Image (cartoon, rainbow, N blue to C red; front, side, top):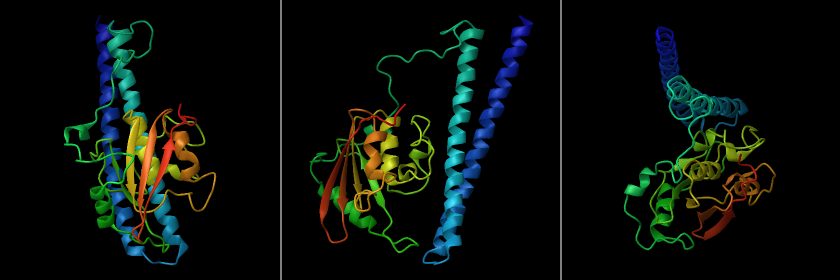
Length: 266
């Protein structure tokens, strides 16, 4: 029995070290994010391509760190399941497989504790959400183009997120996607708001959500196989729906609807 006890202690020490490493990576990621924001503010309006290249590399580093944290957490969880199962004779003993999920289980949805927004309907523009988009405005990025800003809501008008922008976010963790959607940096869904919204829907098992945004989805005006408009439906769970309400600078409001095909989802 002492051999098993030693093995358990050794494995648990490894798991503890791994989780400590993940915390260190998170601290590094936070520092890089602060540096990227400071650099972005300092170089706004610069015509030098090196400024943009530097920021792009910093954003890529943030995404890679997020992916690494997800893999580390998954590895630690699997080792804990191994200890609880095969080693200690719990669920899944002898199979080496993690316990099967309980039917009906779903990820937590903390925003559901908030009150619904009166009069909210996914298929109709809501004045409050439009006003919030206008309050965020239409900031101009260093390339002289309007920078996307948006907010994601559930079907009762409860904000799932605060104001989001392009860059690091939920779409960083793309292990649930097939290639090339999972890692090809040409796919703008890897870091654009639309991709973050789709990732939240996958991660929280949402069948429907509503995104209010200040510019049209990327690719609706400049078509490309790599842009969001051509790929959102593919990275959404099959049978799900993402409605996008756009508030333009001229006051016009337009709608885009994406029905998930699940083509890119594992």
